[in-house]
Image 1 (spheres, helix red, strand yellow):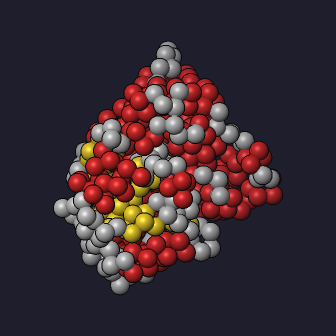
Image 2: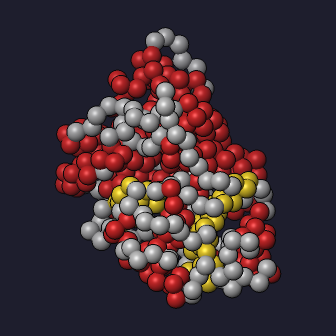
Length: 381
């Protein structure tokens, strides 16, 4: 078996690390742009980090205009702001949208390329500015991935992939996730579990290193997510969730995601449903659809999450899906499209857009057609 494994060169996992952000990044940048959203600022999560930047004499500019599923117009605006500041580095602080935008700023800051020219895989020319990423949710794993996802002007989800998107340093501070609202904890945690599952079942790039990371990620996430929802300030649980999300990010960077993500993308682009919540909605129908092709792998993952099943692959696979959905249900995350204002009339457009996500759909263990996608959306309407 031949494979390549890639990840960020430096990871700091340390409670309280964000309070010494200035000392960590000062060797890399003097005039950083700090990219986040207004909710992070209002909650005070970034205060200690900004204080440390000031203490180290860094002339930063704070941009807090990030929106969920970052629209292309916001991404372009953020690049313009960073250039106006004459930034020499980028710090992404927040959820996946903030970190993804920070990656793109770092790539385009000193480039003549336009945003549209770097969509897809391997289209980034040149290098990037210094980049540090700090996640505030245990979900996307964006701090260790080589991808950013943008909502285009025509409301499509478009990925940007390249080695330049790997940060110089990922700083994981579990304290930034203490007290996250239950809905955010649930949706982002399920997103991370989907990353692990889909990395483990990728039919093209699955490899021993991504497998090991995916199994450990799923073990940590599945055994801690419910308690994280119910006891949001439990330090050990929050740390396990953040670590699990990072490991899942490393796994799917090297063995990319599949049809759960492909079918979740239209929910975010068309209806602005948060990415994690979209994945939670599509998880069960895609798993049950894929089971005939992935039963052996699902059986192995059942052992990881304590499904405790016996029998053949089919029985153990079914037990894995049932146990996983018990965990998901216990988080309280929404699992019906109709509860979010989506009707039967919306399904054909959703299925059409899902099929445009060929980059990820192709990785699914079982091939997905338009008719399959339409049927699966209907299963959770």
